Each structure stands twice: as structure tokens, then as C-alpha cells.
Amino acid sequence: MNKGRLLDVEAAVVEGIFAGCLLGETAYSMATDLNRRDVPPPEARTWSSTMINKMLRNPRCAGMVSYGGKHRVDPATDWDGWSRVLFDDNGHPLLGSWDRIIDPRQWSQVQFELQLRRQNAGIPAGSNRPAVSAKYLLSGILRCGKCQRGLVGHRSPRENRRTYRCPPSAHGGCASTSISAEPAEKAVEEAMTAYFTQLLTSPAPQDSAPAHADILTDLQATLAGELTRKQNLVDRWTTGNLAETGLTEEDFFHLVAAINRKISGLQDALAAADSSRRPSTHTVEASDWRKGTVNQRRALLRRYLHAVTVLPPANTPGSTRTQRLRERLHPTWRSPQEIAA
Image (cartoon, rainbow, N blue to C red; front, top):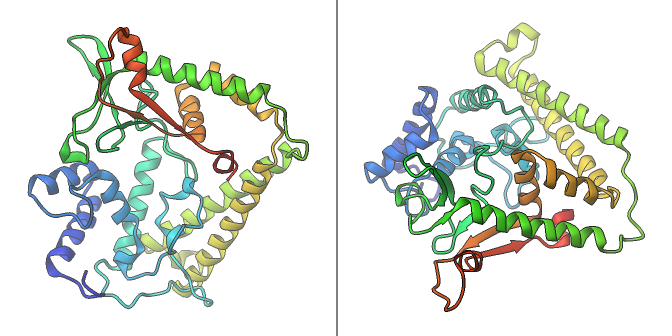
């Protein structure tokens, strides 16, 4: 796109991506195909599944204005393209000055298709994506020290050994970093245990107010209900069954805008209530870290860590193999302000 004008080649690529999604193609397969055909991406060096998914959820492709800057919507609903749409005072989507590539109804059908895929994968609306694999605690948390791409867990059937590797260049990595899974996981587990020990032994702030469990439960239930209500409404509009409810298309846009505002308010209320949790929350989280599932432990890692960078091996004289491996791991911890945000 050049100053709001479509370039035919770029538009054809975007149209192909949306059509491929509706035909059942995955973001991974489409990224692989585009890289194989040497189709230049709009940004970065190569296409990736993340880039494809962002494009499929971007309202701008359908000519609609999306929120600019830091997105107001909670990251947990980043999967919902409708949460990105900016509505005017009359409840209609704001239209941009650029040429649209995709018809709004086709864009909405893609949002419906993506939601169906989440449901089939067992990912409920309004929740974060589950762990990549129950076998790999640190997938996406370990980062390549050269290209900063998240490392992915692999198992070698022949050697019966697990490793974390940087993806190949076709998927946005450099394929130059690899580290054995078991000792890396042990080192990160020990670092997290030490971190929780420090939290539990530090004096608690005197002005921290307790959050009431019943308030949190009510807010979460209301939010889940509004997310479901919105999804049902969007599904009816997408499939052409809106008239069955006695609603017009104008009614639809008014309702979606109102529901989006309510969802945003509920998310703000949840964030405010959650930030006033009791200091004993650290005790619960420490227990979850020791005894929780892989998914629970991954969530805690992401809560307290930005990432763990894996540097290239260094031959330090006199050091053991375990010491050399641990020297490669450089965690970047979140600040208290980032954790509370």
C-alpha cells in the first residue's frame, strides 16, 4: 500500500491469504508457501505465522480504522479482530481513507473461522493460548542470542533427547542456537524458585488492599458472558442470520460498539481488582510453581520474565559442562511496575 493506494501485487497477496484461510490453510502453511515462492513480506525478512495471523485480524485490510498506539484491549483478547475496530458515535465502524483490500463480510467470516479453530483446539474465548506443548516448559521463553527469535522444543526419537532450537530462516529464525532441554529447564526452575523465595521473605507493603474473591468471580463471569454475547452476535451477522433476531445491520454495529465498551470497562475493573491482591498471592504462586501443571508454570514464567536469552557456547577454562550451559542463560526479569501493570 502506497499513501493509501493499493499496489496490485500486494493486494493480491493479501487476498490470497484471506482466501486461503477460508479454504482451511493454516498460517504456518501459508507463510511457508510465501517464503518458498520468494514473495517479499511487508516487514521483516521473511513471512511467519505470527505475521499472517496479525494480517488476518487487522481491520485495516477491510478498510476499517483500528485502535492506534498501545492497544486498549487486554492481550487475552488479542485473538478477536473485532476488539480492534474503532466505532464512531453512531456505533458504525470508522472507515479509513485508504482502499480496502477485503470486503468487510469476508473479513468477518475470517474472524469467525479463526474463532472456530480456537474452539476446536480447546481454547476458550477470552483466554490466552495454551502452552505450545506439555513437554516443553520453555518454548518461546528461551530466546536466540543472535536473532532474538523464540526457541522451539524438539525431540530426537533416535537419541531420545529433548532440545530447544532456533527456527530456520524460513520461519523467522537463524537456526544457529540450540541447547539441551533438561539442564536448561533445571537452571530456569532453580532461578524461579530462588525468585519466589526472595518474594516471600521480603517485607510486604503496608498499603496493599485485599481484593475480594467474590468480586473477582463476578467480574470474570460477567466478562465471559459479554464475550460470548458478542461472539454470537458477530456469528449471526457473518452467516447472514441477523434478521432472525429482529436486528438490522445498523442495530448490529450499535450493539457491537456498546458491547466492546462494556468489555473494555470490565477488563479495566478486573485489572484494578487484581492489582490490589493480598501479598499472600505470592504464596499461592510459589505453590503453583512447585506443584502446578506445565501450563500454570509457563504462565508464571511469562508473568515474571520477559525472556531468557541463550548465548552461544563459550569455552571457559576450568568450568564444567553444567557451568558452561548455565553461563549461556541470561534471564531478563520484569520490573515490579511491569508485573503490577
